[in-house]
Length: 150
Image 1 (cartoon, rainbow, N blue to C red):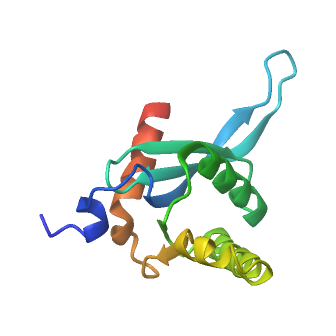
Image 2 (image 1 turned 90 degrees about the vertical axis):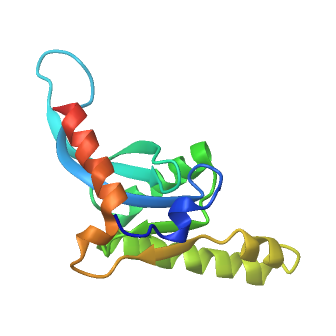
């Protein structure tokens, strides 16, 4: 076994360093009853890199808006992450750009908040393109989710 990255072995609060990926598509049902229609949906899998804890969020589609809503729900339950690691998906790259822009705009509008927001900023890290082996821990979380759902 190779040497683990520092973020995997340093002591930190749960989900301080997080990996995220999508699993699916799955068929979801809105309610029970006759004439029930199913729709295609996905699951956003958030994995703590230090403890390997997994947080799941249901996502309707692969758009940026639904991912940002899932990320907001994740932050409200687990707290804000300092570092988020993901592959180079379009929705992940868009979320990284929007979060960076919002933090910069809030820092410019209020001088007292600027140091606080700079210290609490979320940094987004992307694995190299076409190299899924770099995201092994969150890909294993997706594999585990699929196994338990089957």
